[in-house]
Amino acid sequence: MDQSDVGNDIEKILLTSEDLGKKLDEMAARIDEDYAGRDLLLVGVLKGAVMVMADLSRRLHHPIAMDWMAVSSYGSGTKSSGVVRILKDLDTDLTGRNVLIVEDIIDSGLTLSWLVSNLRSRGPASVEIASMLRKPDAAQADVEVKYLGYDIPNEFVVGFGLDYAENYRNLPFVATLAPHVYGG
Ligand SMILES: O=P(O)(O)OC[C@H]1O[C@H](OP(=O)(O)OP(=O)(O)O)[C@H](O)[C@@H]1O
Ligand SMILES: Nc1nc2[nH]cnc2c(=O)[nH]1
Image (spheres, rainbow, N blue to C red):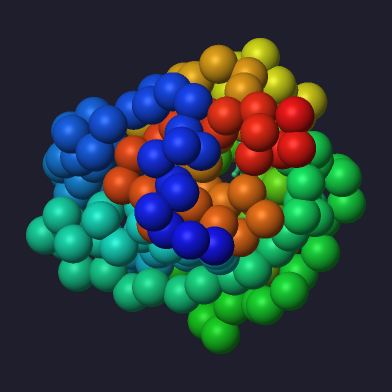
């Protein structure tokens, strides 16, 4: 893709880099406080959570371990298939660990509700969720998120790790795309 075209592809910026940074500061402060004196393993969900993981973990003063999983319920389009597949599993034994799942977005909630029960079955001391975004109007499964950035409208968004057909993940803000991107 020609990067000079990206500006034309953006319809509306929902959250600026400053908005995201402010929430990351708040989340990191709460996590530092809540996990004081306790072991903490951050589990990032590839690929979308890369930006949240990088920016959140660098704000933490708490010593952490980090691992990654790739699970997917999305193809190249914009709708959840509801079928979750493990594309890459953790390298870490979760027995007795305090796990904090780091995500970019909770949309239908199907991915995280599946992931939480999958990780809980591995004998951790605790499993909690930190997600930068959530779409309350899209919920199809109950997901208890302990650290949340922003609730957003039920629109497909890109940026800050979120892609459309693998593009736009590197945008430093969260935005909707112009209809022409989808061939509209
Ligand atoms: O709440 P849900 O409707 O299940 O949607 C949320 C999931 O969708 C996105 O991942 P995606 O499957 O697009 O993969 P990616 O992170 O590699 O882009 C996002 O990172 C979440 O994991
Ligand atoms: N890029 C992107 N991926 C998602 N996965 C679940 N919801 C979304 C969304 O709004 N945008």
